[in-house]
Length: 118
Image (cartoon, rainbow, N blue to C red; front, side):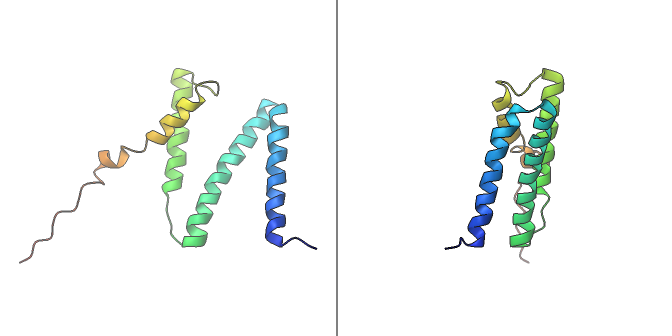
């Protein structure tokens, strides 16, 4: 009895992620940095595949979120010495809440004026 191809692919991905979870914490900090960047970019690639591959919509929204999150993380690390210790959740909450007021500040959320009927 053979497994369908989709289940084999899913099993390979699960085994690979389990290997990453088990091996990466016991390596050097440079390997941890590379693995973190690879996983962050893989999330970006999966969202781009979902948008362009399945829906056919071209959007730069995911790139904006990645850029805003990276910029906020860099500012917090440089100015306030926020690292990946207990401050990790502060960075996550700040990055998730930072873009929310952005459309309101730029005027994108204003309703269009009503069309005049003449």
